[in-house]
Length: 292
Image (tube, rainbow, N blue to C red; front, side):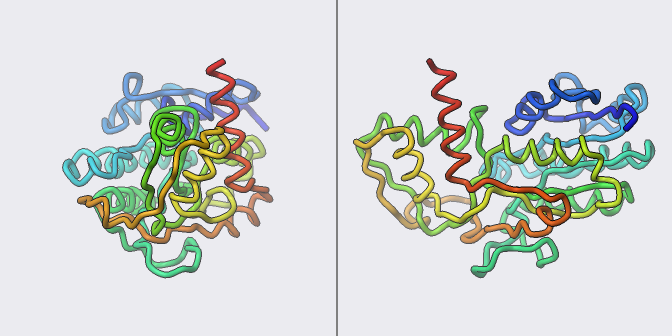
């Protein structure tokens, strides 16, 4: 395969960091940018960068992910999650390249108890989900070649996430209340990055454009996830108590059920996806090793 040039936006986030690890061992050329290097909300800057660097593929890891903040500032969330995505899609259309875009389970309303397939109706409950859905629509309207990958409950050793918060709190507190009525699947950013990386490295994306779902295997509640984190970390002194979402009032309605069906991505790209518990333990071990 001739040398491909892959741009990863949002490279300092959880997924971008994991792709940096992988890009370092690739024979292909990976270019990594964040807001200080390339403002993807600036259409002209995006198009000029893509042309100058001869970019063949963009993996868009940039996003406004503050779910609560999006309710207060939907305009900024819209700019990053939709308008910037339109810019990237337009640049790839002009360059005849391919856009990988990361979307979210929040485009669904969380009704029912059957894993969501890619063709199920969407129904975002709040500003974050709405703006992410607008990003998906912007890609479709652009006509560019694209793979949209929806994921959920992302965590890693980088940045702020539920796993790192629970590692800290279960080591400090005697008791914690964690909601048990929101069900989904934790996703290790390293596993998602490896899936994207393998699709690119094997040149499997051409002809397989469309929307896909990716999370780790298995299902749990946030309560279950917290219990497993504490056990894996050896934080036995902290009592973790289940509670209802309504006990923690919020401006944001979060999906009660957001399990994603991964059959399509596994079938199309012959992926084997680890169980969330195994990946969680691997990530915790990596965090603890880094602290030694």
